[in-house]
Amino acid sequence: MPPRADGIFVERQAYHLKPWCDQAVVVAVRVFPHLRIWKQVYRPARFLQEWKKWKDRIVEMPSTGDVNGLPVFYVRYTSPPKQIFQSVWGFFAYPFLKRTLVALHKEHHFDLIHAHWTVPSGVVAVLAQRWMKVPIVLTVHGSEVTYVARKTLFGTAVVRWVLRKVSKVLANSTWTARELSKYGADPERLSVIWLGGNRPKELQRMSEGHKSEVVQLLTVGYLAKRKGHRFVIEALRVLRDRGYVFEYTIVGDGPEERLLRGLVDDLGLGDVVYFVGHKPHAEVWPYFLKCDIFVLPSWAEAFGVVYTEALGLGKPIIACEGEGGPEDLKALGPCVELVKPRDVQSLVQAIGDLIDDPAKREDMGRTGREIVSRYFTWERNAVATMEIYRDLVNAQTTHILKRAGTMP
Image (cartoon, rainbow, N blue to C red):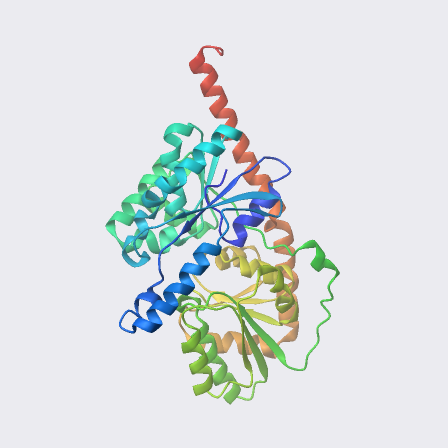
């Protein structure tokens, strides 16, 4: 039972586990006015307007739902702002979630808890285990070691505490596993299980025969500073000055959007850079199909599912060296061009080389597709995860029987 499941990679894993186990998904939904609302407090009319919009969204939020056949329970909780207090979110969330967890456990008698992220879900799982008495699997997606544990000493303590309490820790990359070991993760209870990147079955029928005289560049990702959009845009200005012809599409939204749009205008790239906003996951695939090069030079990137999704469609990718997913992919074959983080010249070189060499793009894409089909599928992820579930549940059963005196 995952106490929390937000993120398409969590939904995909849970969906592919359906043939082997029954699941109830509990999503802890944090309810706290965004910082942008509080910034309007000195403008009462605007503040009240933003507050009403926020309140209306909360009221419209469902309490239950069905996501691809999975029962989902959305439980609201509140806690202080992220910037200082994210490490305590789980302790705030647990009192709100406990009633739902108790009711579900009475109905289903769960054999195992699968928590995604240390905070808040890992904390909630550890607190619930005191009365649920079942093993905990914790999947670490990266923010624990790139943000929570580094932000405050209490955050470090919370991450260490959860890692000690859970039965098994799953890391999404070799890099993440190394970072977790620094915070006390037991190597014997730590495994790397890669996430999936295989395309939906319905996409198999879509044509990949896109041909264009203009090389198509694509980025899919939240518009935040660490994703590196600004450096791509600055690199493209250099490349355009050198005579390169291209188009660049950015899928996503976020706090950096206004800054990035201003940068595009300042650099005179408005005719070749396109912001298409946030798209539901199912609507992103056509953008992958259309592109010739996928570029996302983000740092503090523990994995990056979008890399494997692009490679699964045979697209070469550009990513930052020293990051989790890109380094693991590179180790399996030449499908990734690794650049220095926050380095415009490194991006100029990598993008220019791939624009100049269509054969290299094709070879990288072919290699990437083979790597994804072999190592990075959701089916493979589900099988590996289910093996861990079985081992933990069998060990728990054996332990209970021995304590009851029914086994030698």
